[in-house]
Image (cartoon, rainbow, N blue to C red; front, side):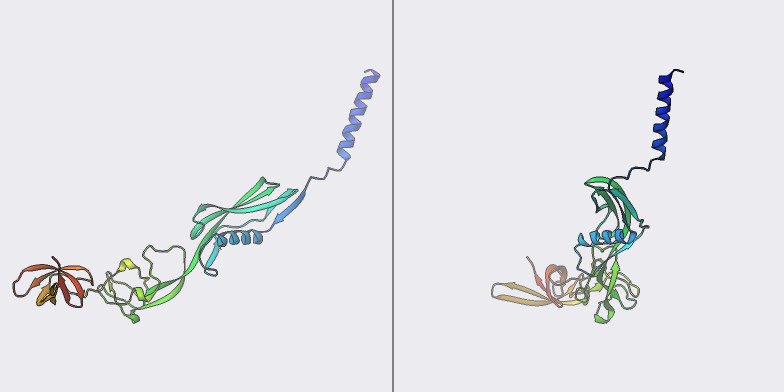
Amino acid sequence: MNRVMRFSMVFIAAAIAVLLCASPLPAAGKTVKIGAAQIQNDVQRAATSQNAWPRGTVRILFTSPVQEMEAKGEKISREVIPVRGNPFLGHGQYAVRIYDNGVFLAEQRVSVLVEVQRDVVLSTRSLGRNTRLDGGDVQVVKRWVRRIPAQAVTDTESVVGKMLRVNVAPNTELTHSMLREFPVVRKGAPVRIIYESGPLSIATLGVSEEDGQDGGMVRVRNTSSRKILHARVVGDATVQLVF
């Protein structure tokens, strides 16, 4: 081996030894740790800010574990966005994303359950079909719910005086689909039949062939002529002929 080759090998070996013994260069940027509690706060703030429900009536329940996140960079930022489900009510999922100077670094998916507190109308006891409801039959309570029925009832004024279409057990949440207007004209019951034409007004007696609500149309039988007539309900046990 000539002198040049021996010198080159010694130089390379020395360089490798220096590299192995030297301390590692510090990584650029700083390390930022985001705790699980902070992530929960971020998600809760995002879910609440997007929600149209009144302040204090929304709660966020976490249905998956939330992990601490760590990132290294010069300018660390984060965002929380909904990525699955309904972000306003019920089950949903949020993505917590970390960036360095706008460059994506990491993401964590957080599953939540969004509930809202609202008034619901409940039956106070067992009630049978065709029961006409009064104030003692129902009560308004507040409940945390994760869905709003399409036919939801939130006040007793919408219930009292109406009839049940179905049997209900105590503490059953009532909906509009369970209710119908109380008939002011009953099938088989006597009715007063009114005919008006200008200044002329004639009244006679009849029997209703069907139940009818105020303003609705019913078939009635004239007691004298036995004819079936079509009339509009204008009051309790009172109908007006329609031609």
